[in-house]
Amino acid sequence: MKLKSYLKLFKISNIDFSKKIGISNVSLSRYITGERLPEKSILNKIFKLTEGLVDANDFFLSNSPSHDLSEIHKEEIKKMIFNIREGKLKDLAKAITLVESSLKLHNAQADLLLSKLKHNKKSLRIGITGVPGVGKSTFIETFGMSLIDLGYKVAVLAIDPSSKRTGGSILGDKTRMMKLSVNKNAFIRPSPSQGNLGGVAKRTSESIRCLEEAGFNIIFVETMGVGQAETTVYDMVDIFLVLLLPSGGDELQGIKKGIIEMADVIIINKADGNLKNTAEITMSEYKNAQNMISNIRVDISPEVFLCSSTESTGIKKIWNFIKKFEKVRRDSGSFYKTRVQQQTKAIWRNISLQSQDHIEYKLKSKDSIKKIIKDVEKNNFDVNNASRIIFDSIFKSNS
Image 1 (spheres, rainbow, N blue to C red):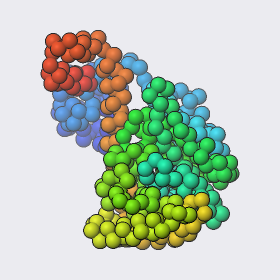
Image 2: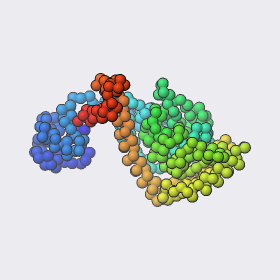
Image 3: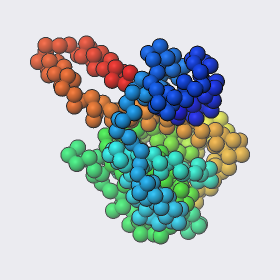
Image 4: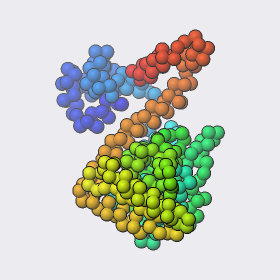
């Protein structure tokens, strides 16, 4: 980080900073403009005072490759944002593609795009999980169409497993939501998980912001339904729905207890035909179980509902509870507090993703790292020492 950017970010004047490191304001100005380079002792003071955010590289590598965008690219992003706000879905799709991309240019464009987006506090983000085959997509389509009839704009981020070979989405929920996908007030975006844990794609929270900018006030995040790693979506949404199948015996059906404890709404889906009686028994069991599960929300308790997505029964009751849930939490302020907490978690999630990308695209390609890996494979070097050396190299390369 350049010293000028650091001072601007933390609102520190040149005079105050120069006093703290024991130099004149004139000398500091020359360091900032690149007219002079700091001595080693001054560099150490700057490094310590900025807690490592500004180091020697930020002065000596002034000619290093820049991630700054050209004026043409900036103008493209500006136009894209305007078109998104005008409701042009083609530009919305392009924006989400930029956000999901791993290309350096796209990353820079996405950073600029996201910095210009407003924080929408009026939208409602609904997370939906459940085992494969529970009918998540059918439920979302039925629910979504009913919301559109009420005047809402509905968006769906449908996270699918990734192909190991291509990295792309395997299933593609547009093929399972035919009515919703062609409705002018709906937008469906299937996204590959890219091997990401948590039942969501790597940049789901950023995609949500793009959808909100386009005026979608109800946003569904449909997760893969893979089990224990499913809980990350909870930190991206305002209300968390868990869909279950009618069942006898083991009512958990592969869904982990931790996910059930996080549920704001438990929905026994496919409560129709021969399964209706079984569904009613399952609902009763879960309502009884609620007494043994502590509430994850302080201001409202979870509810259990029956639903048939194919017959459109139970949808109205579920929506009435969701509206009640939203109102209670907005009135208490916990709705907004949770969103702030989610932003903080998103910071660390993004840092973790950037660290993974650094390891994947930079570290693994180094000849020295390849040599260490080969030695481990040949049993000439042990795993723990290899890990420690590689880990230390990450910090040495950035110091």
